[in-house]
Length: 204
Image 1 (cartoon, helix red, strand yellow):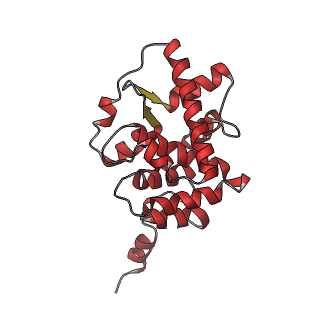
Image 2 (cartoon, rainbow, N blue to C red; image 1 turned 60 degrees about the vertical axis):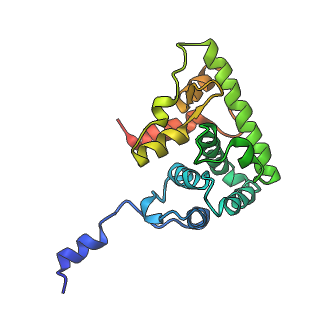
């Protein structure tokens, strides 16, 4: 019979994890993601984990996940979450990897609200790419990033960067610099605010 100390260790193995509820739990279930592997308080983590799976050509419930995103876009309070997810999904599709659906294939699965949001995100990143090409050093090829072998590193890199048609890598850091320099962002969504939120959680 386990001692009190061992029982406490077993129940406190992941003290920072809580079981996701509401839309996060629904998305994780549809995507087949173990909720114990996700930070339930971190929308960015939920979006990355789900997008990384449903972007795949062989995922059987991508349309159901996107139907839920369409539903969430009808709720103003869920707009930022839906944009984050669609941006992650679009970044993954941009890499032209056989394992993922292409942007055009993915768009065909979107509802009307999500399609508008998808096009808005794509147009915004195109603006960032144009600005970035005229400012600073030339962009690096995305090949090194796409060659990452660690699964967790792939998840982080492939969802936060996109591959441009010429093979260059454009990332969230470029987007934040663009928003600071130009003062333009996605309607109702600020990458600067997301970056500050992350910095505040990580701390000095």
